[in-house]
Image (cartoon, rainbow, N blue to C red):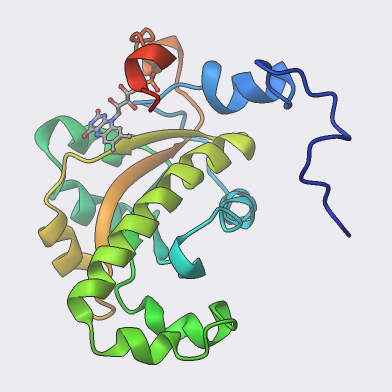
Length: 212
Ligand SMILES: Cc1cc2nc3c(=O)[nH]c(=O)nc-3n(C[C@H](O)[C@H](O)[C@H](O)COP(=O)(O)O)c2cc1C
C-alpha cells in the first residue's frame, strides 16, 4: 500500500481539520480527564487495541521505550496506592484498571530489530547509561501522550496522575527490569457526571505560539 502524504486526495481546506468532527471530539474536544470509574472490567483486548495504535507514533530513532504495567489485582492496586499522593490514592483503589506508564532505559537491547537502518545503534548506546535514560524518558513520555489519545480511540477514558513517589513505585514494581515510572493512568468508563471536572480554559494559538 502506498500512502499519498501530499493530502491532494483529501478534501483539505486550509484552516480546517481533515479528520471528522466526531473523531476530533472523541479524541480531544469532548474527551475529559476522568477521576472516578464504573467498576466494569477493562479487557486486555481493549488495551491491546490502544497499544496497536499508539505504537505507530514516532519516537527518537524508533527506540519505542514506553513500557506498560497493567495493575489489576487488589493487592497490586493497594501496593501502588500507598505510593500515590494522598489525593490520588482513592482514585487508584477505585479504578478497574490502572496503568503504570514507564520508560525502559534498556531499550537499546531491541535496537537491532527496531533500527535496522543503523546497524551499530545498540552498541552506540550500550556504554551510555545516562544518555539512554534521558532518551528513554523523553520518547516514552511522548508515547504516553499517544497512549492517552489511543485509549480514547479504543472507547476508553483515562485519568493520568503524576502525583506519586516515582522512586518508590520503581522499587516496588521495577526492581528487576529497571523501568522508570513516568505517569500512573486510571482507565475505564466514567462512573457518572461527577467523574469529570468542568472544562478549564485552554490557551489560544496566539498565546501558545510565536513565529520567526
Ligand atoms: C502529566 C499529568 C499529570 C497529572 N497529574 C494529576 C494528578 O496527580 N492528580 C490528578 O487528580 N490529576 C492529574 N492530572 C489530570 C489533569 O489535571 C487534567 O488532565 C487536566 O486538568 C485536564 O483536564 P480535562 O481533560 O478534564 O480538561 C494530570 C494530567 C497529566 C497529563
